[in-house]
Amino acid sequence: MQAQAETKTSPWRRRSALRSGLLTGLSYLTLSGAGALAGVYLAHKFGRNEETDGFMAAYGVYLVLVLGAQAFRMVVVPDLTRAEAQGRLPEEFRAYAVSFLVVAVPASAVVIAFPGFFGELITGRLPQSSADIAGEALMWLVPAAFLHLLAALSASALAARDHYSAAALGYGLGGITSLAFFVLAADAHGLIALAWGLALAGAVTLALPLIGLILSGGRARHLRGRGFEVRRRLSRLMVGVAVPLALQGLYLIALRFAAGTGEGNVTSLSYAYLLAAMFVTATAFSLSLISAAPLTRRGTDPVAAAKHVIDAAWISLAIVAAAAGIVAVVGGRLITWALGKHYAGDVGDELGRLVVYLAPWMVASVAFSIVYPLLFVMHRTRFLLPLAAAALLVDLPISAAARAWGGLEGVALALGISTLLLVLGLMAVLGQDMLRHSVLGLARVSLTVLAAAALAFGGASLLLAAIPAAVLGLVVYAAILVAMRELGLADAWHYVRALH
Image 1 (cartoon, rainbow, N blue to C red):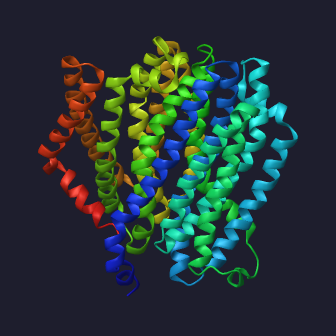
Image 2 (image 1 turned 90 degrees about the vertical axis):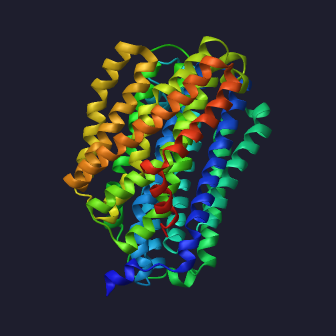
């Protein structure tokens, strides 16, 4: 009876699947877009120098924590969904919140007390001015990141009730608030104004889903209970964030290796990574967030999980390949126009190439976003800590060899290779059948969309100038996908529509 109950879904849930995915995707597009505009404003106003390198190094730590927090949404949704089914969601939410605060408050206090030490730690061989701005920024960015962790928890509790609007509004409004504050305060306070704006954004992002949770039934009187089980929650938190933090740790390692390739390259890699991450977040990550709760209710097995990965990857990679193709064709011109004179010429062209070199990372990151929640839906979390540690250790020689081979482009390529190895390890944890079916399916989907993008955008670039080529390439690419829809894209679309 329980299995039957879990597989039933209401008509409202079925109708709301696309709406939920669209809301979530748009909220992350707004958040990412606001971040991109902040980066554009930063580039025009502050250029590309030692101070921007230092700030971007601190921002990299912020990204590690924030993206880890967002990944934790995929981890905790199954737990909260089961708690909602048992009528104890408020108690589960409270226990997680208290446990997170036990970590967040001391960690933030240490960073605020010793900004110089942490600034020098993350900037390595960069000049002292880089370390100074990095340490000052960390004092605001680390607490801001923990606000995002609590916001992710609140959004996960809402997802357990199939409510996504408040969280989507919170993330979108948080991004806009951060951008507006930075633009207004940058003249008077410099780069640090962006760190202040991100802290303000964290507060806004937390406030709206928390209010939505209270209005949906999580009243204060429900938050009383016996014990917080902090140790168990912290253990769950540690296991849950180990791999997402390792994934972002690979990015930090890439920044450290990029620092050894020349002044300004940390900033260039940061911009390329943010652009690539925006493509993934708006597609695969958003799709994973709305699918975790339904998959928990209905249950799954390795074969069904592999089908979920392949179908979700079809939708995500089709969009990601189009976006990457446009960047590859327009390249340096668009980047120079957006970021200003400091990114003109070879610098802009290099940044455009970095996005292309990050293509393996985008494919691997799409796969990670889809695969990772399945580990918690299927209770396969035993090997997550060893996998996280192994990924970081393996990446060091890969990044060193890749930098020696290709400089900054090699560092970007190494990031994709290491991420792909980590994803293959996660698939193996889910079972041999899962690994075999997923690898074959993902390889087929990746080769299909990348070949279609290369043919469409590459061919158009041989005939036309950059901007007309991008438009023609997009039209041809869409036509190719429509013509090949029976190879799996049509089935993937129907599957995603029925997720709820």
